[in-house]
Length: 357
Image 1 (tube, rainbow, N blue to C red):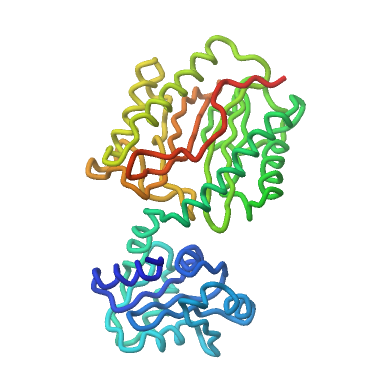
Image 2: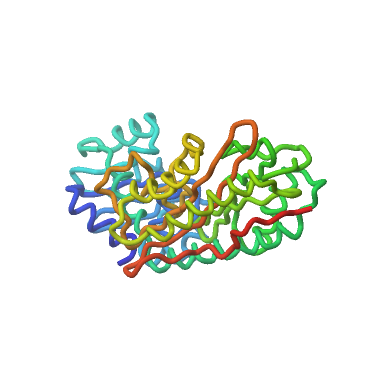
């Protein structure tokens, strides 16, 4: 089934006659067309992509034209959407992203139609499970990310700045086919590596750990990987910390399989880190879903309900870390797909401790 067909099936099950999609990312998910101004309107009878003059030529030439009517309204988008909705009585809009003013505009234009939230939950639920086409795009994104890591460990010089490392990673990924980065690149060294989402600084790389968290976006889909290397030489304490993170990550990867609880995954890694004497130093969850957004469902977290289990179609990260405030930190992250038979690890980059300089 196409994404549009899956959406229609869910609308029928949820008791909606139609849906109006206003967020760019969900419009791209449904249509495959990347644009920044317009709406997608879907009912049982019609599927329309509404846009303006800037995008109309590209939309008509895109694969979206095979499933959607491509319309360039000469009136307000909300009024045009109302015409497409026809006799719909109950319509879902995106409760997670639609502004209050946007919602009020729809309500005015959709007079006589019950207009309620629900579209975000429905589409997010569809996006949680990836099909073969989506997996292929994420495989391509991760291949670029792996190539970037192989490049950067040869490229880094001890006199570079964190910002220069981040910039080189981003330039390399773009040069190899990424449409953009999947998120803001993290490259933090020395004492700053204790901040899980630290911002690269315009300072020369500090001796000690250098944590790099980065990813590429290919045809709308993200990759996500973290590797930690050492600038200079690692002492015994650093090696022990690194090996503990690696042990926790490998144990979680070994535990991953269809039917395994998301919270159990987190506990598998956390128990190893806590047992090694670092209790409280692993302050984030083990992982998260990845797709068109860098953070999607499911969440591999202690607070995730026990009923939430890994299921074929899930793509998640496995990224334990240890962070000692003001001293240093380390994280190792792979991205995996859950299959009928186990897992597939997208990530090929080595995990042995690398010392540079």
